[in-house]
Length: 412
Image (cartoon, rainbow, N blue to C red; front, side, top):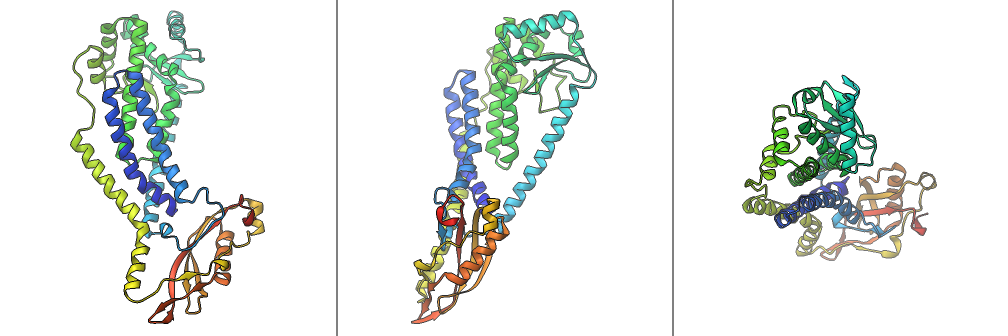
């Protein structure tokens, strides 16, 4: 749990750096697809950053190594509380996403009917013109106000009955083309990834900012594809503005009026658009916060070193491990059978004779058998040259880590 906590803390500055990089790149990209891809790639790197950090902190690649007195593994109680808060947030947003998914799916089953023959023919003609090879169902809905696409394995485009009755055929076709463009671009798939990133990394404002850039550029790309089909910008803008008062409330669906409608209309008409770029002062402030948080995170491993220096100033020598005694514990047979592995962090007290008088699990591996095996073995086998004060041995406490990894020959 400690490793997860430090991974989340390190992401505070990693996420800000990635957002600052995107904020620098976006003004240089004049193509909507390039802007969308840059934002989506940034969000992907944000999702991978905590995973990579966790693997590094967890000692990935140093299989089966017994970590003796590793300061970087020192747990802080507030880090565990931070992880609990994060888990609670993830659980809450996951529940919200599941409820939203259920509500969206219900739209495809309630108050829907088949399209009139003429409208159905036009929809399939638009699908061919946009080269959407994916099977798509078209339904008329009495529960929505704007066209939307739902689902990604079996996408369904819902067309509101009010729009069918209130819009000109060319306007309705333009809006349907926008939804088909979402399917052609696989936006229904990336939408799931967006929600997952927002759920897991919900605590970082930079994630929400990058996610908003992805959604904004996604709508711009679909607008361009829809116009390439209908061929009339003014007519398409008129269709969009007619939906301004009919905004959908379900965020898990992709709707024709998604994104900032005012910005989209201004862009389509060639009017000056207020830049969404984060101001230099705001980015500098966020970067400063990230630098402070990163400094705190990276300073934590030095705490034990500073304590050691303080002990030296008081005339207390450091503990010296007797390396030949610091061998790996035998792997519990039941743990081998169940393929249990992980790292156990122990708080140990070394007596004046160098033997371990007390070994307590302060960072469990998640498997009780491994925790017990590590504590018992370290207490009975590991030895140190005792710390000295004024030439006399003194008792001392420290922390050690033991890694159980099945791939390591010595650990089996």
